[in-house]
Image 1: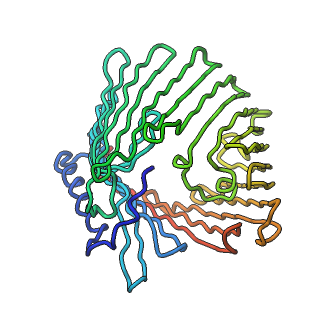
Image 2 (image 1 turned 135 degrees about the vertical axis):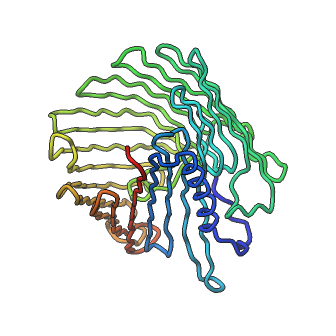
Image 3 (image 1 turned 90 degrees about the vertical axis):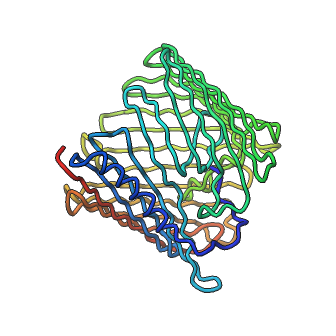
Length: 409
């Protein structure tokens, strides 16, 4: 995903939260005028973190009798102290969507993250449309400006692209294209192709590939095939990813084990009993002259027939380049009551080279979810970690959600 520009000077006296409120509730007012006394559904999610004074505000709105129109926004709320208190909040997404439910055709306007076929995702201020035609043909396109912080456009960029796909009885084939300009200069250009095949309920295959026309090389390649029945799934895969495709994660397992490389491997998932699932994965990896690989084994036990409560244990070994470590993970998720849920997860990594940061690196997360009333949801999580790049740290994250419904269903 294309990140907002980091080279912009400090924002002018703008209030992203006020911008969001004005635009979002203008959409809500439009929906109310359309719905009159008909049911209207609004949802607000507020998140706050102690990592720094930051958080997220998520708002969604939908008329339940006219579901062809909805709106959503995600706003990053942050504050800095360099040179005095400053607001660093920004609008991540704010968009309105009109959708034809029967055909699946839709158009979306605003700020959004566009993913289309095999080409890379892009953060865009603009429009996206999708039309599903008779005969299984789908045409998608997007156009707009790559996102700048706080809508603060001091240089002009442009991005456009699309995807054409054709679905047959057991096959779907697609071709996609992306072109991006910054200050009139070509920044990114990709072409991609994707393929999916399901010749039988027990057999599936998929492939996608993206080629960077600027760098003159493949940027993302995936080929996989799997066989499955009600109790077991076996998958064989091969991937190639460039560094620009990798997205940040939170857990140590994800951060330490996710790097650009070419991989070939296999995954086996087996439901040994109705409440017991086993998983094993192994893959070999190459990057230039480096050779290595990683493997994992996981056991998951359900505590009830609906799998609402689970516990699990995982062992992982990574040996590739500078990433050489052995790790163990345990997790438990429990519905304590109808309104209260608890979950915890613990990871311990034993690096081959501790880099002076201790013999083991732990990561832990404890979370509670509470539903005090039908319209309210509250969740609180506490995260603690120590790793190769920093000492011990602890953070907290809270989420408060409220759903407002007007009228009768």
